[in-house]
Amino acid sequence: MKEGECKSRREKVVIGIILAVIMVFSVVVSMASVLPLSDSSCNGLYNDIIRKVTGNASETNTVDITGKKVIFDMPSTVVIGERLTIKGTANTGDTVTIAVDDEVVQKLYQIVITENGEFEEEIDTSSEEAPPGFLIPGSVRLKAYIDYDKGTGTVPEKDDGSTVILMLSGDLTAELSTNIVAPSDEFTISGTAKGSKYVDILIVAPYGYCGTNIEDSSVKMMYIGSTSVTTSDGTFYKEIIVDDNVDTGHYLVMVLSKGANEYYGSGKPWITIEDALNDYSLNTRTQDEMLEIILDIMSLSDDLLWIDLIKIKSSVVVLDPVADVGIGEPLVVTGTSTREEGYLIVVTVKGPMELTPQIVKVENGAFKAIIDTSNAKVGTYIVQADDVDGQTDATTVEILPAKIIFDTGPGTYPSISGTHKGTIKPKQTITVQALHVFM
Image 1 (cartoon, helix red, strand yellow):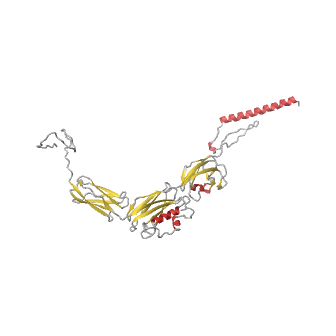
Image 2 (cartoon, helix red, strand yellow):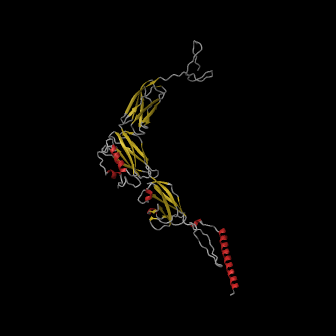
Image 3 (cartoon, one colour):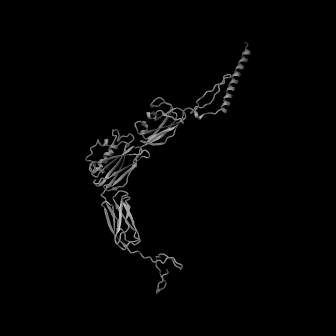
């Protein structure tokens, strides 16, 4: 073949290749303009149709052009010890595995993805099945892996989605319903302990560890009890019923909450407060020494402590001085009582006649009654407050004649009705011979 003919043929081949490339490009662009880019029902597999031009034949392929993706739906902060719901959505796959600070635990391995692409798993952040990252205050990163099948442990792979949450230390608040209570009465201890499953309560008598137990005077030992903490809002409530024959005086009340590791102290196997106290000699300990022991147990740990004093005092009802009043004026009776909040006190007023008694409640250690004197008679009355349990107090009060107020009332004549206070200073002496009252 001559050189000129070869050159001409090579040029035709090149031109043919160029035309073929242009045709393929035109077909792809045309199909992209009329075909949908994705089908959301296929969990992220976009059904882009690529027509491969091979002579007169063509075929259709399904191509994944989006990749796996997980979106978390999580709170930004969690208190250590609370239950945490890990949830979100995935655009494909059957399961999702969650790694916390690059570590996978069995509880968060291969969580099932529902048909609508959602996943959800609840975990106790302080339990043994929780990842270690949940027990340390600070930020932790959660990473998601779709259809991960390499078991628990460290995850080296690139994740399919991640989020960050802040782990917070628990808190402890408490309050007493009253600071003074009588034997046989009760009081409550309430508060919040977010992240805790329960709180322990210790109450030390005035004479120390071997003083009377506040709920059972026959037991000569500090009161040790506990009460559960609600999972919904982290609150607790405990009612203490004071025994009839306990020692009077100030009792030390302590509320304790274990730290994130679910042990008392640091480096000790003290699961309960009793376990910790067993390592100390207690029989001769005073209140102050018991507090020092508790502080020693909790040193170098994230355990929490709240303390207060409550006074046990024999039941007392005391009336305040009562001011004399005129008939028709309200008779105000006030006083104090060591009875518990809401306890009922009966107030009576007896003299030339008995006035209507009042039953009032003790609020913040005090009570108040208002007696109607509209139908009373002039004279000396005995005011008595009674707790109907043997404790009373009494005082006297004078009910005086009603005060006379001169008032002609409104009329059609030129006048000003009502009570007028002041001094009338006439410019000259006026001799009054008669006084006329118009009714």
